[in-house]
Image (cartoon, rainbow, N blue to C red; front, side):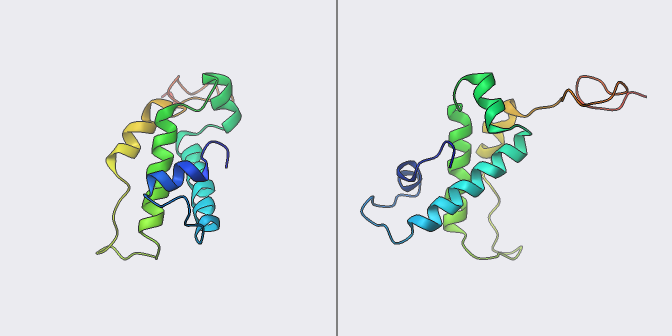
Length: 116
């Protein structure tokens, strides 16, 4: 994991530090959540560090929300039992989403949309 720790994950999921039976599973959830956040915001870890000097607390919080969701919803869910990711997740990551990239062509504006 790049910015989460097992200690932070256990606090978020309300798991006693002494309970170690699921540590490997929690670390997997942490790695997966970090990858999900990076994909959702369209940035790399290195880009975040270069831009902000550290991982912003909103990104850490959003990642912990995903871990908690994964921990509580362990099995494949059907549409009747599935609980969506909390709105807070989207609100936390929204301001960090990369909308443009240096590899966009000249026919696109600053928002990455094609100019007509």
